[in-house]
Image 1 (cartoon, rainbow, N blue to C red):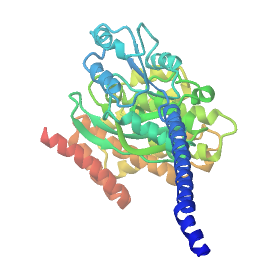
Image 2: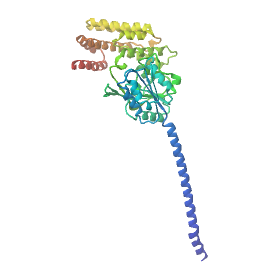
Image 3: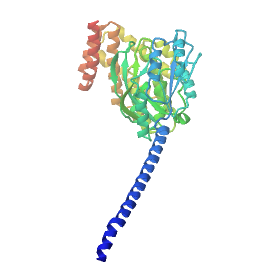
Image 4: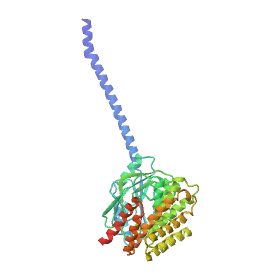
Length: 430
């Protein structure tokens, strides 16, 4: 009987008390978890604000680009990224550009219109005004591909903390904004970068700390100031590619890219030569420089030889002499009928020329082999066929082309035939 009474008391008194205690304990634990969760979320939000939205500084240099600059400005201020510092450096435009800039000045952090010493000087003025953690520049005839371009770049930086510079893909567009084609890049080695520029300037962003060690743009470079900067960065920092189309690069009659091919090539040669003057030169750098020169020397079209010589004269008179020698020899071929024996003589002359060109550099024997020279000679021979074709000596050009196809490797035949066939096609079409 006593046992029964004790059981009833426990059932109706102690168990509810225990349930109440458990409920209180659970509620207390839940409150503690909620509090910890809220604290965690607050910390996360704080980190998100400070780390996921670092300031991005974008510079636009401009001079008399009223036709295009408004679209450039809109592509920057229309980005969905919330922390952009936008700087416009105008060179004293007189075509209405200033009025367009003033129209959007409430969205522009800083702008000025004054004379400068060229594009590199203007861009550096903007860079010196930058306070962002990430920096870029976009020219006044280019634009970003969409309003999420900057956000994608920042996200890539946040996911790859060891990366110092990011470059993406670009659409090439005409002066009306029509997409012509897309250029895709990839990650590359230093040697590959020295062989040819693999970075699309308007699609490239980097950490501002790079300026502290590498410096700003080289203001002596008027055509490859971007490529020169990429190489200096690649020598010390980590560059990565993002698989996304970030910008649109405009091709039009007034753009440097369309108008001054030889001057781009000359500055490229000068940059590579400057790298060889450094001591010591790492083997990867040295090899890349020689391969880069190999690629450049057969690409000149000599349409503006006087301007090219004036540009070169400030650097190395010996290089001016060698480049002029190649231009003059190519010009003599206009008035010659070149048969099969003549092809052999031209190849022999070019072989000696290119060998003498490279023999000016220390350690050239390591890289400048007969095969190395033969590749440049083959490139230059086919370049001569294009030169003859452009000079309206199309019959001579086609005969020379056929002779060259018969005397070169199958791989070269395929590459050259494809390029030459395009030229013939466009000529017949127009």
